[in-house]
Structure formats: C-alpha cells, structure tokens
Length: 119
Image (cartoon, one colour):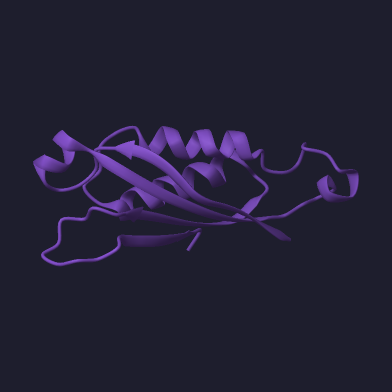
C-alpha cells in the first residue's frame, strides 16, 4: 500500500447555512489522503492500476464547485465516496475540507472537517 496526498486544492464555491454564504461565496480548500493498493502499477511503472492525480482533482473540483451543501462534512463525504467509486485501487480516502471564512463570532484561521471513507 501507499498514500497519495493532494494538499490545499483550492476552489471557489457557495456552501454554508447562511444565505450570505451562497450569495457571496468563498474559497474552500481540500486535502485528500488516498490509500492505494498498487497491484503491479509500482513495479511496472504504469499509470494503469493506480490513481491519476489529474482525474482525481477534477472529481474533487466537480463536487466542491457543484451543488450547494450546508455542511462541509457532507462535501467531504461526497468527495471520499466519489473517489473510491472512481478508482477501485483506493482502499481508504481521508478528505479534509477547510472553510477559512466560517461565520463564527470570533477570530480563527479556518474551520476544517475530515471524513474517512470507508468508515
């Protein structure tokens, strides 16, 4: 097994509970840690049988920039499920979604949620 990490993938989207979040939108950041069963892809130095980073990025982008979600937890789960469905080689997907401008009554860097799939 090995782990592919995609860090700080950035997207503009309109998720959140408040109407202002939908109207104004903001950046969301995604990290993906994908545990992969390599089969022969490593020894054969072949893309077949492993995860294509470009395709994985597009799967993440499609979900994050797609349908509005109230919860970043729901976004993270949807990304994890979509990646494991798209790539049979992924045995575990750990997805973190960060929301830097979370509407909280205080100062913070960001709010983030991590989902592991399958659980």
